[in-house]
Image (cartoon, rainbow over all chains, first blue to last red; front, side, top):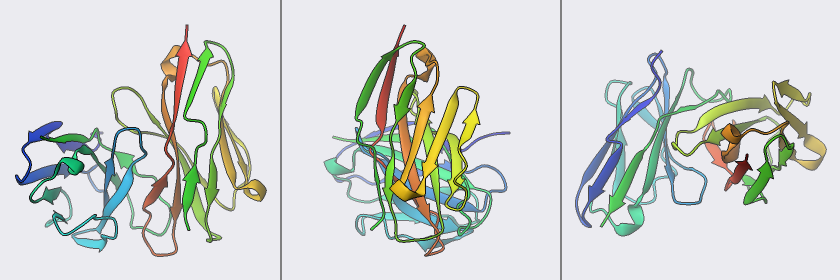
Length: 116
Length: 116
């Protein structure tokens, strides 16, 4: 079946602009995660959704970052007033069940965000 | 604090050599999960293995094997008879279940280059 998809694959924007990154999880997966990967580093957790609600947003770096998942499927990560330090690859992952069981997360190809 | 350490930044081998990638983790939980992911040049994270903290049996899958030792908090990954296609960055990750979120804590990765 189809894996996790993310759009766009690449996004170039100017400092101060607003961007939206989209994630379409594997069909039927209830848990959805966003991570950010900077060059040469491992992915870092941003936010976790159980269904429609953000159950853990402890990884969001500041209030310029926000994410939604209004119908419990597709999620959008929104970044306001982008800064050059926001440049990274943003990864989305989904897993079949709710958290607590260490279920495997399946990752999308990522969106490479470049802030000029 | 939760932490994953992959001390080997980069490893280079010649095809058909065996290679072991080290992973050491820190956690206060008694229930946790460990993962290995592969990130080829294309960038997508590919799931390799999931292991829970109560299962210390070593696992073999084709040319891949994993050695989990709770006594040393290590979860090492060995590739036997390496191939050029094994060239990638490999990440070890830890998931705790204490807070009902399965967010992954990643190491910084080990870049493996296999030369023909």
